[in-house]
Amino acid sequence: MLLSAEVAAASSSQTLKRTPLFDRHVEAGAKLVPFAGWEMPVQYSGIREEHLAVRQACGVFDVSHMGEIETSGPEAEERLQHLVSNDVEQLQIGGAQYSVLCREDGGVLDDLFTYRLGPDQFLTVTNAANHDKDLAWFQRHAGDAVKDAHDRYAMLAVQGPRAREIVQAMADAPLPSRMTTARRRLVGRPALVCGTGYTGEAGVEILCDPDDAGALWDELTRRGATPCGLAARDTLRLEVCFHLYGNDLMEERGPIEAGLGWCCKEDTGFIGSDAVRAAREAGPAEKLVPFVLTGPGIPRQGNAVVGGGEVTSGTLSPCLQIGIGMAYVPAGAAAPGTKLEIDVRGKVRPAEVRTKPLYRKENDG
Image 1: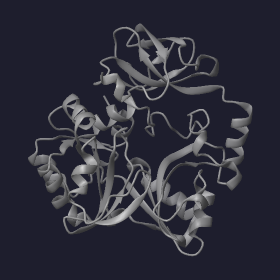
Image 2: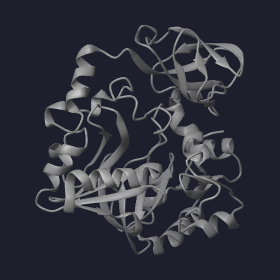
Image 3: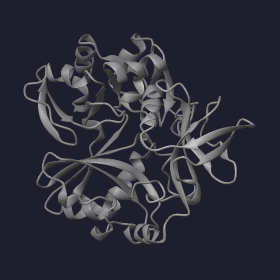
């Protein structure tokens, strides 16, 4: 099943948390599943329909299960610089930055987005399944500069070619550009609008007061945004080769083999920087690569790559109509064009390493 790593993290015996939009998901007929301790909509009308709505027009996702951590005060920049892999000093007010959070040995604890809201105020968005772990790590290394901000926010992702048009019509001022953020009022309600997303499409992510989430959701759908579930979010991100923690990223592997060396600035001295530098200089023994099946079949997480390696994410691409995925393979088998064989449920399927992203607009013809 899609998103297996985080779905498995939610025990059926535990009490599941619900976002402020839970009742709307029920009313819309969403299929609800346990996901990272939350009861979340995995799909509404269907994965393919929702996926194509984002590629062709506009979709809206409830991602209020994601976590938020605030780092503030006169030492905020210095402490955050020590925690995350990117260069926080280069982050301008109103800027957004992707990074990873590493252990001392370079293993990846999470991948994160950080927004600089003021000279000494930062907001970091964590993956839902990792929020408590990340918060404890932040508190351990940054002390009283850190506060858990999750209860203060709901989060909506509005994605697709019409997404910015729809949100702009609700806003009191121009929307922030890609990889920036700004405070705006959307139909009179205050929100932090961020030019980021997880689908490969234009759009924004909206952080708002939980009490305002319902009104914003209603207005977005009224204006034409299609409600989309986590399954479509997964197929969308995989077509453009965005990493999913628990699948493509994990504590047992570092950012260099995952292809995330671009967001690691070892000279800042972040936790794990020495290990990351050593891996970069030595060259990884294995690399994460995107691939397509060149025949029938649908690859899934855990499928073995014949001769060495393992699939970390796989699906049937709704846009390309072929099996696609990402896999760790020996470094010598990582070049685009390399032929692979993947064991899919006992059948060996031919595959080929490709370049990122797997889906491009020109593929639509």
